[in-house]
Every structure is written in structure tokens, then in C-alpha cells.
Length: 492
Image (cartoon, rainbow, N blue to C red; front, top):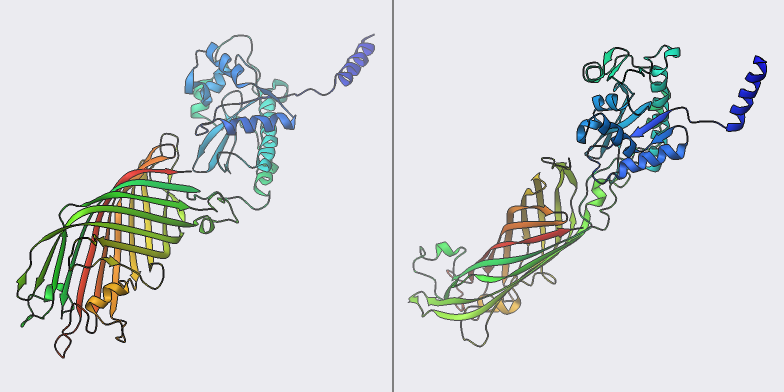
């Protein structure tokens, strides 16, 4: 009769189909702010169909019955205490930081079964990584079950007394002080499986796909024009003084206006190899600014100065460039364990500046339009942005202007267009520095100071500087702009 019962039991097991022998729970993961990584891992383990997956809510309910709430429920000691009320063989947890998921798997006593660092992109594992991690979790659950099986020489179930000890061992101590006690050998194929899945996708930081800045601006401009010298400061020391009109310009009131910056990096989303950071940092950037003010003009000669004249004027500046900005993580992490991305790079493009005097009021001071060799003048710039934290960064930039010539209508007043030099040669440079940062999400702030300086050397006889002999011909013009901009930024 006994043999008949055995046969019936065997037939019942076959008809019932295979059962999932081990039970696993996927806990909350530090740094997984939207819980999407936890959901991905849980879905992958369920899809594999090798182990039974307990819900996170059932774990929290069991932890609450053990008077564990909040973060304490997701520690090794919390896992050990909760396992007394909810039987499982492995608990998956860990931390996401700097593009890496540090996996930790504990058994029911809170002892570490397995750990590994895996790369994540935008907070998720690749599909292949997720599937292979699911198999690693199943293998760890098998280890946990073997350790807990008294018939296999494990620690035993410890059921019946309702205490928080397992085989006479205090669980709060076993997890904290002896994480490797009674640890089963790891499956040697598990790490190999995750390490040899083809080319590794290394996540690197990149710029925002599109960003913009809207800013208010305050601009101060000055200019001097001196005949017969190569620098304005030399004019007063030259005796006899060169003949010709002398011009000094100052703004009675700073130019008040606005400025707007736009940046587009179409390859910004390529943050994994083979699209390296040297590719995703390629883009185009542009700037436009406008200001208006009333200015004081003082005309003078070698014999003295004239009467100040107040006129209206406007100031327009713009640039367009191709940018290359390799990005890097730097600075302090925020409360979500996220670091800001800094960059160091180059810009090459065209730039223009136009200072226009109201034509209705007669004055000898010229407008200033930088024509250059094309739609503006060429420039090369180096840029650095160093984040101290996500909400505060230091920005620096330096520019070298290539042949920022005045327009022909300005040159003919002080030089001769038929001269072999073209009537003028010009140099210039720019500096920019300040601070910026994020306020909330894509929104941020910026406060920058900008400087542009130009020196123009005029050659030959002009319409305003008519003296051209062995001791005097042409002269110099010096022009500079100092600007402060402040406003809001957005990047997506």
C-alpha cells in the first residue's frame, strides 16, 4: 500500500507541473529616484520565470509588522528581521551613482550573497544586461535557499519562536559585523556572463540637446581716436602734437538692453561608446544683444577740446560659431547623488559689433561697424565651465579676433583705402567670466561679465586726418565694450 501512495504522489507532482522553488524580492534602490531601475529588474526576473518574485508592498507590510519603516527596512539587518515574517531566499538592493549600479544581493539572514558594479544609461540597464542580471539573481536565490535548508547543512529555517534570531545568531549582528559568514561559493559563470556580453557601453556626460539664455544687459563703451601715433596714451607726450581732430567718447548712461544665447548639440544623446564624448560635444552656438543709450561726444583738436554734444546711439552685437565641448563629471553630488557636467572646449565662427550714432544730430564721431572679411570678423575662443555643484558653476572664456576691420566708410575718415594696407589694420580680443547654475529641473541662472577690446591702426591720408608727411600720417583708434549680463537659462 505504501508503494501505491508513493506512485500517486509522483504522478501528482508531474501533473501539477514545475513549481518555482525560490522566492526573491527586489527592494528600493538608492539613487533610483523614479524607481524605473527597480521596475526593470523586477520585470526581468519575472520574465525569466525561474524564481517567484514577491511584491515590494508585501515586503513593506511584513517589515511594518516588525516595526521597521522607511530606510531601516531596506538595510541588511532589516532584511534579516523581515525574513522572519515573509519567507524569501534573496533580496536585491544596491545604489545608483555616477552612471553605475552597485548591485547587492542578500540572503534571508542579511548576509551578502553577491555584489557587482554594472553600467547604467539614463538610469536603466541595457536589455541584455537586465536579462543576464535576472539569471544572476536566480543563481543567488539558489544559494540562499541552500544555506537555509537544514537537510543541506545550511542554517535552517529558524521558524517557531517568532524571535529575530536565526539558529541562535542575532541577525542585527550577523549582517553588520560578519557579512561573509556562512557565505556559499558564488557561481563562477555569473560574473563571466556579465563581463563577456560584447563591447561595454560606457556612459559619458554630454551637453543638453538644446539650451537657451534670456538676459538683461548693461553695457559701457569707450573710444578714442588720435592722429599721428600708434597708441592713444602717446598723443599727449608727443611734441609737437600731431595735427587733426581728436575724439574721446564716453556714454553718459550705460546702454540698457537684452541679450539672448542659443545652443544646439544634435549629437548630445549619444553618451555611450562608440559615440564618445568627443562626438556628442559638437554643436552650434549663437548670441545676439541690443542696447540703446544717450551719449556725450567731445570733439577736439591739438589746440583744445570742443563743446560736448549729447546724441542717441544704439549698440548691436552678435556671433555664430561651431563649438566643440568635451564634457566631464565634476564637483559635489546633489541629494540625488547626481554630479553636474562641466566642459572645456573651443569655438570658431563669425562675430559682429555695430555702434550707430543718430544721424539726425551732426557730430564728428563715427559709427563703428566691424565688417571683417565676411558677414563679420572671424574669431577663435576657448571655453571652460567648472561646476562646483549643480546649482553653482564657474564659467570662463577667452576670444581672439581675426582682422576685425572697421567698415570702409569708417576707414576713409582716418586712412586711405588705396594704401597697400587697405587703409587700416585691426586686432582685438574678448574675455568673459562669471557664474551660473541650476535652480530647478532644466531651469537655471547666469551672471556674467563680458569685455571686447579693439585697436585700429590707420594708414594714408584720410578725409578727417588730412596730414600725411614724414613725421605724421594716419593714427590709431581704440574701442572697448564692458558688459554685465544676468538672466535665466534652460536646457533640455
